Image (tube, rainbow, N blue to C red; front, top):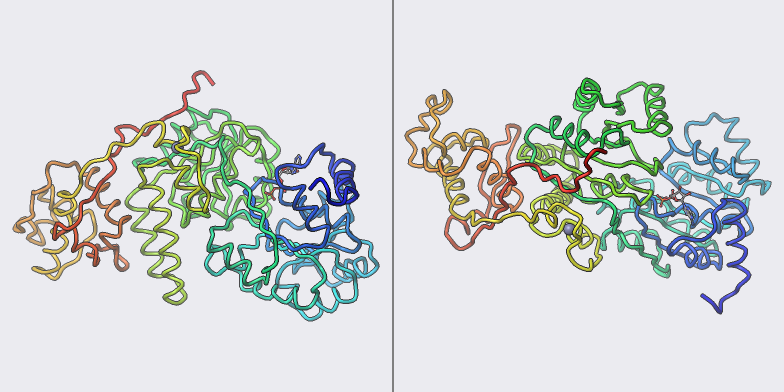
Length: 530
Ligand code: ADP
Ligand code: ZN
């Protein structure tokens, strides 16, 4: 960068200091800004908190014209614009929350060149009227935020984003910068193809967040486990707890409050006023724990979140990474803790089966879930696996995740797998029956429960052949068989069926290595008296 125009850089640096009040660029910001100011297209991959906004805000301020930012985060536009205005940046937005008068005013400002930045919702941009508006004004740069929304392969697809390919055709001379915090190799390729970013330079920052300690624990009594985490390691710390359903958000928040934790609920079913009040308490006060569905967090910038806990399994590694990424933006040690159990796998598989959309869509969801399960069941370093998923190579085991700190013990689970699978096979072959994990485990353990007696299951040859393992150990076996694709969940009741791959285990053509459950949930970093 040394022999390219020094003027551009000093101008950008001047804006950074004068407008934003920062001393120096971070990471690749400088190179990205220089490239875009010079008129080049860019595809920027940076983890959450990496500093993506400046990458388009500064070019918008340096280049003549108005920077147009496409963002799906309508709820945040007002805040973003307010924050920029407080810095003296002339910013405005157009979205469906405004009335006609408000929109007209912003449009007039845009045409008069009285704006530096204009935020647009993607569904607005598609409109002919908006396209016409942009034609009549002068655009300095197009920024496409959350660019992974254009990828069908991703986990956050928005059809409105597909229309953004028109930008290049209609305004070939305006540089475009697409930004995202979540992109695997496949998603990145899809973004570049769909947005016609063939000539764009790719800037890929490291996705490693070394200060976050990743831990995935078997789920026993999740609320109690969470409380142990908070009391034991993070008393008085700010944190986010993610739950799948609104009801479990409420239950968990109540539970924490009853045990002296300053917890607040957040989900889409709450009144907008309550949501806003809870969010602002979380942001402004110290040590508030937000219990939320994944509706919470996009665009939230709180540097000192010390832990992110998941009480339910995320649907994808992208989601997991994004949500855990909200911990420790200040670089201080933080914890990402996930509790995961057999029921999560059964429930998510059922949700995929019952989901709307075509088969290809369901297959994509299943692939995302499988990757998440593989991360949960790995006996390798979690960070190595996580970075590998995003196409990045780690130096080696990280020393700051549960598998590094307390290496899991593996055991040869081939015989256990055979016992379980043959119980499923016998029920299907001899009785034309399908059952869930609970009943099959009871059969293997030789338990004469009412349901076992009712179905004469104590007469099966597999009855009582699994007493060498405990019920909890059997559940772990089932979970791992599901994760490995050696067993499948079917239908509304979560009944278990064999897969094609099951045959390899039953026919002794394949061994199954399993992860031994730790005696106690691993508690790696000790922070006595904190
Ligand atoms: P992202 O959009 O990638 O999640 P942001 O653009 O919101 O990240 O930036 C995250 C935080 O880092 C913000 O508080 C921002 O002001 C701060 N930041 C960004 N760039 C710099 C910099 N060069 N120096 C200091 N702080 C920065
Ligand atoms: Zn590790």
